[in-house]
Length: 427
Image (cartoon, rainbow, N blue to C red; front, side, top):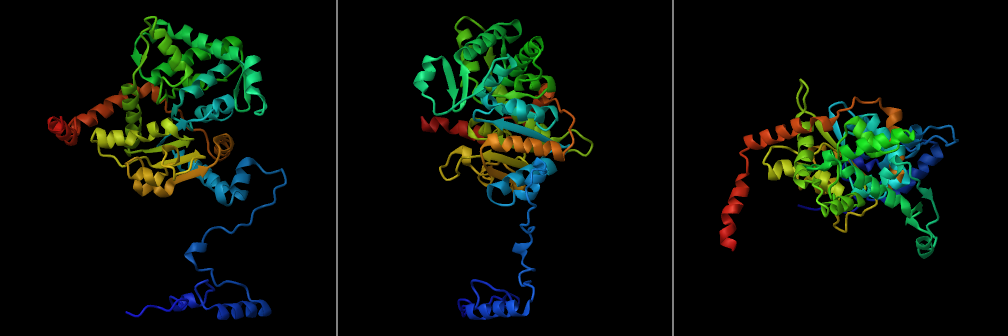
């Protein structure tokens, strides 16, 4: 079969269009003729690649609102990804039958993002459950205790700051006594009777949130703490690495004195999987629901949120397809192989994301401290409040459902039994 000559038109229709692959002299003469005759340039109007809205933004004059600015002027590059993220969140992820999980990494609460963005998202019913680093929850507690964080200069000498008793998180400064006071608060409440047992990190944080809320009321400072807000709204907060924070360090220290508070990671794994399974099965008459993930940063909380689907499918043997909506804000690159930069397409191969829903996946390469306030403002401008799902109150019900489906699937999977049968051969 004879091959086409390079530069020859692929079809009669294509020959009417200018193209880098077409005859250059003819295209040049056609353009000059259009210019002389004043003919409107319409040759590409039918291309499927040119169906997007024209880039024709309004002038920015200071009168525009955040949501209008995002919709009208965030038209390309990562600004466009942020616009797509905001629109995905408000137009699909906040539908009534969608359960939204939020993961938090990076020092967001010290910068005030808990008060500015996360608490409003919780109170408006826009976030139904959370996985956070312990550090974000620890530093969040400073505000609930009435302790101060200050803006500072990242170029200051850390040697001098240490001598002055000042701790630095980049350009956030605070007194070393803030740490000591917060540690003392946690050690005091954890010694209470209700903490003397094994529990999930969601139960633990709910108890902590109750006491932070009491302190806020005693101080008359209003709602300052994410833990407090989650307690009031029935939003479960999990920590993928409970020992990797000052809260976990204080739990460990008390264990040396015989304290019986233990955060059980097995409960965390199964409870988070049960939330996602419940989201997908739904409870309405129509049956079925959807699961969405809003990932700020990456790291362990991202994986802990996404691994809920492999836990359901691969480990428990329950038929499922993956999360429906994926929205990540990250500054991590995908080519280093790290989980923080892994794309939603890569997550499909693990069963974490439903392959049929990849068009509903957005990755915005931007600092969360920039994107999250904008997303929060946009969501409140474009979507009404949702009723609180209060998933914390339904933990037992959801876990029972997960257990029931696991039993119906045959308990231990056949693959697991086969693997166990092979063990003696490898000894």
